[in-house]
Length: 557
Ligand code: ATP
Ligand code: MG
Image (cartoon, rainbow, N blue to C red; front, side, top):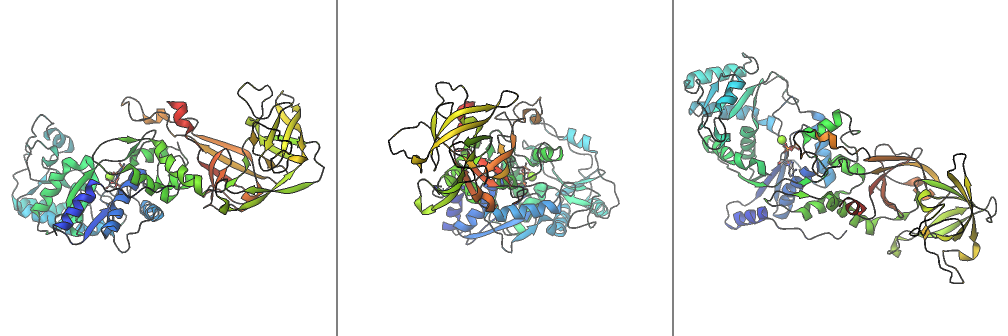
């Protein structure tokens, strides 16, 4: 893969300016996932950005779990997220944090806001509160509880913490401005009551801080200098700043927004990905069709190809959707030069070479890479019975078909010329075997008399073949934007043909020792890898990572 030059983006420029002006000596970023699902390729963009900045400047990048919503979060997700970040090639060293580490401090700052008369306990029910918030064109309405005394607010908030109230009876709100044109500033909720144990703090808390309140304070506690988030938080920035301006914390990180990564033919929200998993539309978070990091990894992408993709996509403020084929191009380019070539037949058709001696076999020399002699050679066994691809034979060939047909001669890769003499049909009239003749003078695929053939086929010796299952993948959705139509579920756009399982494939014997790290090219068929979950030497399972060319674009445009 031609690794592209690391791209400088507008955030790098802001940071460089801050360093030049000596606003900061040391740059500190963070990647803040909520542990409510597995990471996806969109998160990879944010990981490469945040951890990348720490490398470039250099600085520090924290991993912080934003774990303020105990109902949806799970330790299993925490573990999976850590694994995915490591796989991508990044490390947080000792800088692992959780927002839940700060629950006590967050509580103390809330008390501070109450004491400054900048927060109050509201006892309206959720529906009333929503109605009173107003709309984009109408100001909100002050809560009747807005002017509660500081003493009453302190006493109520303490009682909330002490589990004296049921869910939904009270919330703590910031006292900002119910008429603000920015709805986020209309007295946002800071704390809500949730009698739900937390995966890390257990039963200690029954009130939990809201995201907007927690996030900026966590950033400040950790000494983050630049808090990078996606564009939908732009309207939340005044709130981010308001909280930090009104509590007695010194640090004030700068929030900078950039556009999310969107890919066509994909959904990318954890909520929707969770639905695909829990409703069994896919085999799990790591299903090779999923845009999750674990899925992409299992599909066979390398971490380097994902980092390369993130670099090519770049970081801007412009909303856009990237073509899935540009992700595929990254791994294809890498594998074109690095993947050894092997032969495999996915839909086998038996060929008997009638003039090849019974019981005989031989080893033929095959190149591991046509353009890179340094990748060496290997020996491939050849015998009287072979398999070729069903698609490489046509009983009645049309004009554009140059491969094997009755009476026609083709070349077998690294082997001999082969002519089809006779076709055996089964009881249903389907071709089930070809009786062929080989020319012993054409060993290595060259004919001494200069005879030309129009096609070269791959093949596998029947006696030596490994039987395997091979899985071919297509896009999980058959619509460029599965969420485009609000009236229908994205599930209606699931591609019914996104997975094809071929269970009677024949592989050349060198693949017997295939490791789950080894990506190979099955000649003429694409790039493949052993499935890291289900593959074993006894029951080999291979995934197609990507086709050899971007045939999809041509077919679908
Ligand atoms: P989702 O809706 O998929 O759950 P999220 O933003 O709620 O996404 P978080 O776990 O909160 O997920 O995200 C962690 C970090 O990753 C945040 O800083 C977020 O901005 C960033 N991020 C999430 N999705 C994308 C994306 N598609 N492109 C770039 N960054 C993203
Ligand atoms: Mg989130």
